[in-house]
Length: 229
Image 1: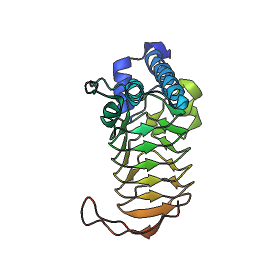
Image 2 (image 1 turned 90 degrees about the vertical axis):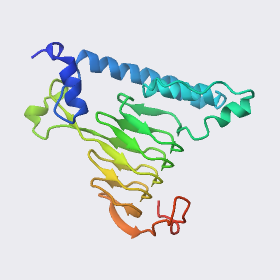
Image 3 (image 1 turned 60 degrees about the horizontal axis):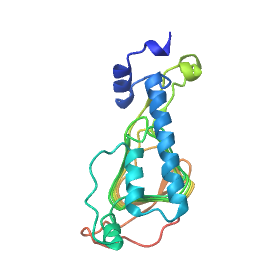
């Protein structure tokens, strides 16, 4: 079977739905090349430390294919910077497959060297903090090697959902299909393989609950103590 003969519309529908699809069709290969170029350009500008915030946001929107217009330029540079105070901040370098399947909430911070295999949607809630070298894998492969068949075989995916006010220690990994609740701390080096409820600390491989946190009374409520991340 030639991958060039696969219906690109149906193949992409299957990818986004978490069904088996073919990743090395010409259109999806082109999408990954586009994303690689966009993340490289974004990371180069982050590395300089002097690119204006507005320009960084513009470049980030290219990565995630967000075509919504930015607010008009403010009267001063400081006022213009303030317009983007709640936009996600992502340090480079960054690796993504497609970009258009990543959604970061307001006030999210992502430290350097993150990896996003966004075959399916990866959603990160507001004010979540992500340490360096963290990885989010929504992509899966068949376990049968005859079906898997290298780059010519099908693969799949499952969405990842991360709640608000989470904190991921460095080198954390989240696997396909995982939902993480609000206010969760993931200890450094942990591998999250199953759903995590609200307001807990999880540590280890596989990640396990080691502490339960007090739920805040309101949006500005206090949450218990220090974490082990």
